[in-house]
Image (tube, rainbow, N blue to C red; front, side):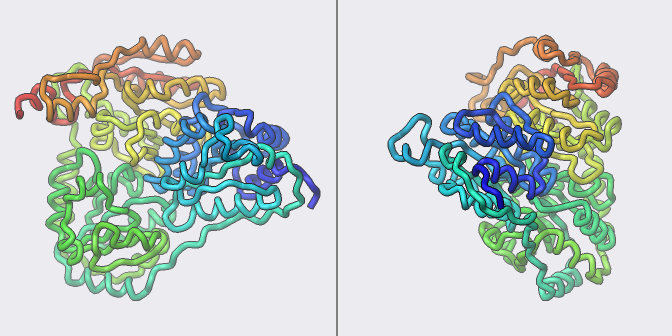
Length: 549
């Protein structure tokens, strides 16, 4: 192969891996890569962000949406530190992602050179692999390994540092072919055991979660669950894995779940969990089961063998890609005898998801119910915060890949993730749903949406507070409010300063027209929804919290 710089070889590898878009904040430490991206600008779009955390969040969201690694480039030191939040989200959310970091020249290492950091030590605990490319000839090897590592087993992030002098060295290294992930097959013996367990079961439950799913596998598992009449719960921020209107859908596990759903899972005599790690949030702080109970009733299927028995000893464990598990289960001969059990679980969901009667000027249960009815196929990129408890409870997802939210609980995620989603799926409505606290963390990325004409719709829920922390504060230290109140700007004027259409909503009945107007805008739009901090969560008020303590 013709000699070219290592930077150009790196970009060639990305093209060979099907990367069509990268996110970055430019830095002098990887100028050679920026030049190589200029050369390849007809093959790869470069999206320039206003903050490295946003670039990393966009890459993480791209990994969620495509199942292949999203790619971000940041500079050394401060740039990498800013980007760490997106890497942490990719780790906890099991999202494939590669973060490339400009690094000091090889001859300057170990001197605490300008912005020098040991990225193996820094990113090691929060990635599947963190390394540094020391030789130009090894660029294809390292990048192809990074792609494979990010996708295989439990998906996750990889961080690769790029010494600036290495990037300008020449190499004739050969670029390999597109990497396809190796996927764990499902043990036929495990399928037979599951069939036998279902024959004995009276109150079975299916729980779906994790990453690695695609449209075909979600359809296969939904068809199996429907044929087996299995009530199905979805893990934290995985509500898109099956149609929420399906009779088998019983609700989601996470923050503010239906207490009756939690009770049913405790009552179940067989729980089949596929893809879900069964971590802290979906198991309600590891209280949903006891270890003795899971040893009697849990079938745990996961792509990573290290997740089987990590917290919960299972009755039966199986290592499998969720798609292969779904295919294997679809072949089972199940004769359900628990129709009443499934119907009761669905009835519980319907009752819990019915909008509440509130005296508030803005009733978020009705706002999100209307959003689901008006835009049933939309992609929802949601942030972290109490506003999301309402969203998860009342918005019904109808198709795969329409929820993009951080299971890591990272604030500032929604707008960058929505931008990535709209770039990937310009044909769909894409909403960034977030609170005022999260908005002020990465709301500057409205500039990115405006610069590239990315038509996201921001639904900004403003209660003038760090709501989740205020709720816990009132519960544990009632009436001692400290460090949770916010003084906010005029959000409409803020959006308009970027040339973005914006409107405020202060009554429930005004939301439908504002939503319709926002959807008619060709570019980005923002709807500012002013809510009362008193109603801090569904069925929870500030005064009520104080009254209980």
